[in-house]
Length: 242
Ligand code: HEM
Ligand code: HEM
Image 1: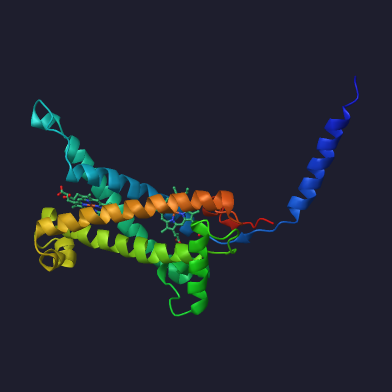
Image 2: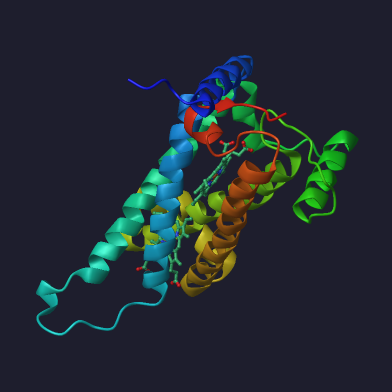
């Protein structure tokens, strides 16, 4: 049996050293199970809503054959409504968790706009995203700019989509249904049914822009930032580089 080569020894020693150093890194538990579960279920629901919503707005060409054998648009609308219910119930559950969860669970629901330090942090992150500074700050929860987008773009838009979505649903469920009684007032407020369709449709593009920037920022931060990002939304733990 031949002795292991010196370079193999070096690797084993190096691994042991790296392990020792790695074990000194402690993580912070940031996102609790309900926040993470909500994030990924909601992301899936939003994806389904955007795809099916797009086809509700621009329907596929009429299928040939018996109408009863071609229910494609019916399935698309069903998937839209099912995902819409999941999104709405999910947001109610997420709001409950903001009340009983840890302080990071509350970050989505308010922004400290009256704190000077908050704006300094948000502008610093903006400069970091624009490649204007070499190093970003480190944050345990959401960074201040992410917080701005999550509240002012995502949260407000998603409430708008739920309210207008259920108002449209109320038209199908007919007068007197709970959807009509709770959300029917939205239709005259925005004009008439077609106006609600148009605003609901426009809202989709707002959400699509948020999601594109959000995924770009999450992956960019994971690579270039100074803390763990995507894995934090999977395991809940944040680790810091350097
Ligand atoms: C439709 C798709 C998505 C939507 C609507 C969405 C929305 C959100 C929202 C609202 C938050 C705040 C969570 C909270 O405070 O409860 C968040 C956080 C987060 N999302 Fe997404 N997300 C989507 C997809 C994704 C994807 C695909 C990734 C991974 C590449 C991702 C990575 C993250 C990460 C890492 C955080 C935490 C960021 C931090 O710690 O500051 N998201 N997302
Ligand atoms: C992010 C969330 C959502 C997106 C992106 C979205 C997208 C869309 C789009 C693009 C349309 C077509 C509008 C048009 O051009 O006429 C639509 C229609 C509709 N959506 Fe949504 N939607 C969302 C949430 C919801 C929710 C929560 C509900 C509630 C159940 C809902 C119910 C409806 C209804 C009833 C219609 C009309 C269907 C029809 O006329 O056949 N949507 N949605």
